[in-house]
Length: 85
Image 1 (tube, rainbow, N blue to C red):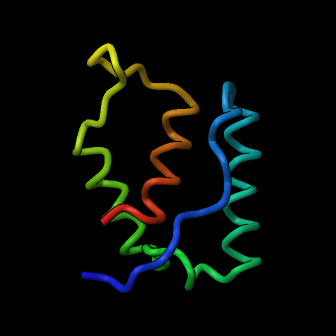
Image 2: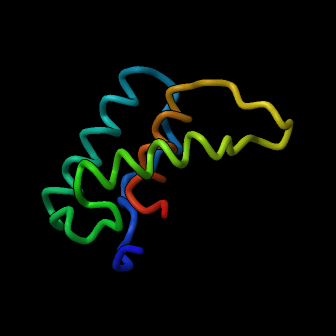
């Protein structure tokens, strides 16, 4: 459907608070500006939001079978949206 690209290099692994999430989004923005979002699989806002909606709808859950909303989960969803098809 789309040309193959990459996901962001920003790592959501350390997100545990709103401040961490804000810093993470700043890292995503820096990655986008540094490499040009043209390298991301979903480089336009339309494609990014489409992928974000698809990933959220996929209901990817943890080992317990039930996900708990968290700042880290939001970060993981944003990363996924940069490359989810």
